[in-house]
Image 1 (cartoon, rainbow, N blue to C red):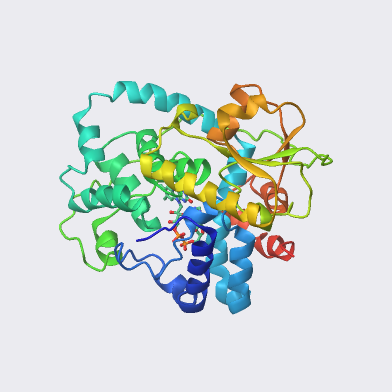
Image 2: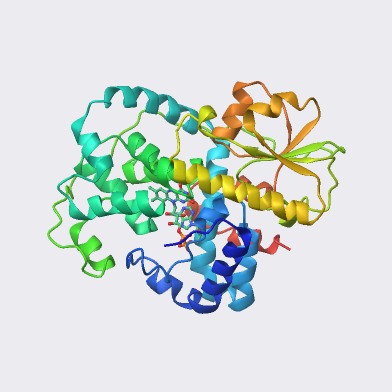
Length: 379
Ligand SMILES: Cc1cc2nc3c(=O)[nH]c(=O)nc-3n(C[C@H](O)[C@H](O)[C@H](O)COP(=O)(O)OP(=O)(O)OC[C@H]3O[C@@H](n4cnc5c(N)ncnc54)[C@H](O)[C@@H]3O)c2cc1C
């Protein structure tokens, strides 16, 4: 597995996948053939998470090859991300509560041998141990494997989902507050209350092509229960009138020259690096390095277009003065930093998000009905 940190490599990956493997995606996508054979899926998430390429580009490219009906499954998956994002935007307390719970649980589990064995890949479950190593080495896991992993973590190893979500965030190149937190909540059974995901021996066997046998799992555990419910907080995702100010770009929007705002003139662009000092969840060195190279790549592409830009640490924002505009960082660590430090910026929201997030009030099955409508707005 190789995730080279540049837009050029991301585009190569997208083009290769669409030309060669998209046709069979819906048939093969659930198989995890191992890190040496990932041709059945796109492996684009580390790039899309960072906005190095965006959903619109990915969907448009796929539609240039096949019709919507041939492509529907892939497009649905691409828009799952947009859906999870919107769902969390409407209920941001799910994220803040998660961090509060995590802090407490971390203290409770700091001496737990069970937890230490899990994160070291030293459990009695061979496949799980392999995936821990794979996650640390490749900083990526297949979607089906993420589901199995989370399910084993929660229901067989009986560890809190909050710790598992933290472990993923620390090591995934595509770590994302929405997809990750809500993915773990979904497996545990607290996202769709009472509905959990139970990994089973036959399913793992089948979708790893019989790589694993004799997997002893708790296949009868009940879903986790949470008393907390979250009602929707009405939000305004409108863009203010853009004045000729300085623009901030966070780690989720690293392709300004392909964004909705590419034609707008800003005095200067600041690309914000957020290292571990200002994060609640401390990321592995490899993940921080990946982000930092992607940021440098964005800077170089802006320089090539003679756009004045500079990379600064998140701690320096407060020195930049008034009238700052930012591409919206979305619910997560960067927005937390701004809120915590009372930094008031004018946010610019992407058209895709403005249009899609209003359909994130209910479940994904409802959202799916709006996908053709959403796609028709991409032009
Ligand atoms: C417990 C758990 C944690 C997860 N954590 C993250 C995370 O931190 N960051 C992240 O980007 N994804 C996360 N996912 C979603 C999904 O596993 C990855 O996006 C996917 O595996 C990426 O591989 P790919 O690019 O080859 O996907 P493909 O199958 O090729 O799909 C194409 C694109 O669609 C989007 N996508 C596909 N499946 C999902 C999904 N279930 N949810 C949201 N978007 C999806 C991604 O942008 C992906 O790049 C998580 C899933 C689970 C079950």
